[in-house]
Image (cartoon, rainbow, N blue to C red):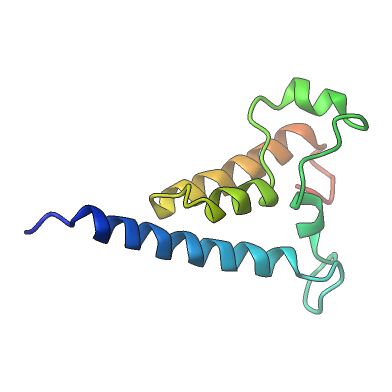
Length: 108
């Protein structure tokens, strides 16, 4: 086994972040009522963090808010070193939605 060089690791990281960026951009471009979506595309609800003015209680309840746009910004600056990190961010986003919204909400 030969340890990868810093250049190889940097190239791998850039490639990973490029794939993440492309995927997030595709998700964010989905129309709100794309064919095949049971209730329309709910990605619109996750594109941006809620408005602090409209939902001040959200930021009191949710310790680590995150949205698709935050993940996209991280990917654009090569912020993800491993696939597990983006998976963790998606899991956090879902957990935040489950914590804030009622169980019968369309969001969860």
